[in-house]
Image 1 (cartoon, rainbow, N blue to C red):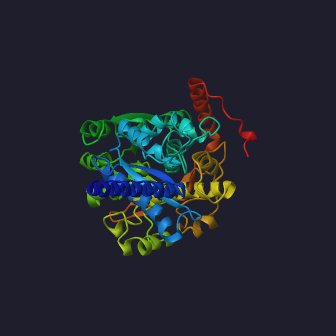
Image 2 (cartoon, helix red, strand yellow; image 1 turned 180 degrees about the vertical axis):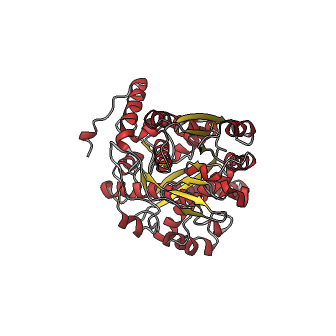
Image 3 (cartoon, one colour; image 1 turned 120 degrees about the horizontal axis):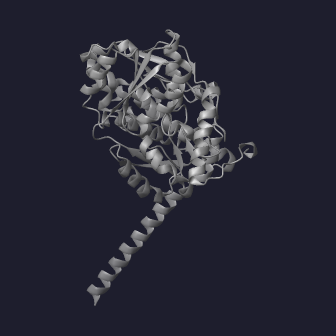
Length: 439
């Protein structure tokens, strides 16, 4: 009997300890804001996906370590690996949404398309910073989508503007070498519309996933000799394209990548032969040594808490982009707290914050980002906030800016955005919001 009582007491103690641990976990979750982090650190897209993820996670860690969270509320996150596969990305989202995440940034246009119909019901903000649906700029139809900083239609317009400055485009050829996916197909509509006004011939050259076999594509380019090649690739597709361009003697100076095709992993494999290759930036390049970078080293890497394998990665193009994406997510949370209280905010409240982001140059500088992020202001009508970039060029060792700022022509682009959003609303039976009534 005594042995039974002892065993029973031990069981009760364990149960009590377990209940206490659960209670502690619930209490901790009640005073935190959860951000699911969808990543791909493996597979053919890892060379580009991993540094973005490192920058994104490091900024969350930095805010917790340096600031104690957001207005006293700690940020929690969990990574889920999807390998850039849309079905696995949706699975990650479904698994993590139970933790009451407020916002998700999947770094995939395909996953963004798949989640667009889900997030309104789940009340989770869908950030697609520099990617996703271009028509989701229209917040009257897409209240939960935020393609912050720019879309692929912006990028296409800015690239055409830039090459037009080099000479009239009438009668010339522009080849789009693109990843045969929703991502790669996004700029086609804008490039087709611009071809009508600028008079160039558009050659569409899709590349099958993952993009390591492009010989037939570049043989076509050698035969057609387009005046410019726009590259809309990702992962190993980009470095492969540059190597194939070298093989057919296509001038790198006449090649322009979108911002996901002009980072260090895209050019370093080709070494010096990539010299002269260009890309449109998402406002930033491979700036290093900014105040925010110095804080990363001080608060994370000097303490062995950094995410990247090597602290030299801090400040590279894609690391910066992940860091900026996390910063914009957190600034949306702060904006929500400014209205709803300095507490754990809900997804609906963060949606309001994302739609009322207002960041001037002074605020961006105070955050330690210099001019790598352009001043932006979102609204119901404009979920992007800013539509500008600049060209940077690889000199064989590093990226350097080679153009002034280029603003997308929103007078030309806006009617196309609204027409596409209106068609989506009709298809999905959505009643657009009246943006004139949104405060």
